[in-house]
Length: 98
Image 1 (cartoon, rainbow, N blue to C red):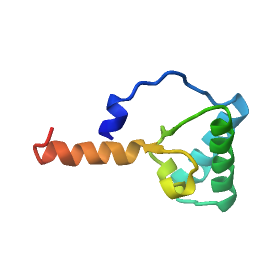
Image 2 (cartoon, one colour):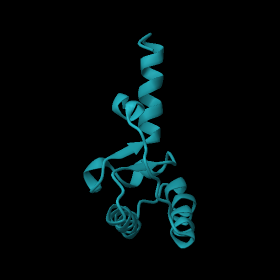
Image 3 (cartoon, one colour):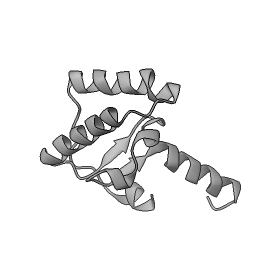
Image 4 (cartoon, helix red, strand yellow):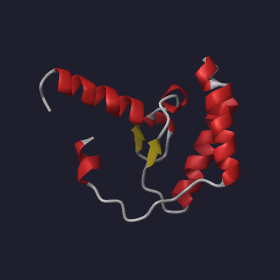
């Protein structure tokens, strides 16, 4: 995580409107309800691969539920899971490391 803080972002890639709609549908209609669908996991992997083809070097899981569906092992790019990052920082803070 420290490497993320020190790195600079030279360009950002964004999802298309249809990708955002499908991803939101998966989050709210499946993941928030505890439903883990292999087809949805495959869709996320396809989106990540498409972003990689456009030059992405990493992906941010900007919703805490995405980590329920995917992990670093499932992705072709480095991932930054916001839920894991927040939890890690909370533990460090509570332990007096920050």
